[in-house]
Length: 74
Image (cartoon, rainbow, N blue to C red; front, top):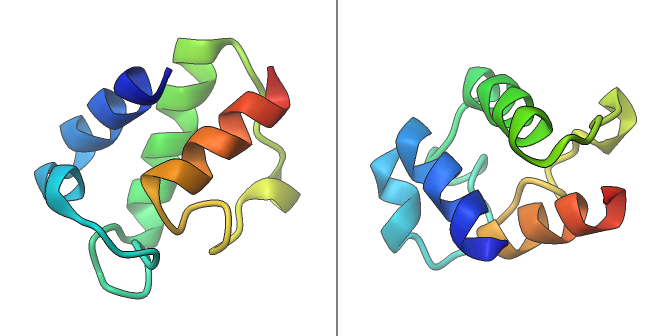
């Protein structure tokens, strides 16, 4: 599953593949508009619905946190 998530993320921004921090938004790797695209792609790929209350800096801080969010919704 992590490979699928990473694939989706790198389609939006290739820098995510080499990013090792835990502040994708804070470090400017992704922007708020990217998050909307990521949410849409994750919902389509995994057949989930990501509620607005789940769209937080913590849930989109790293590839691992995004994976954890997806796993929690499956």
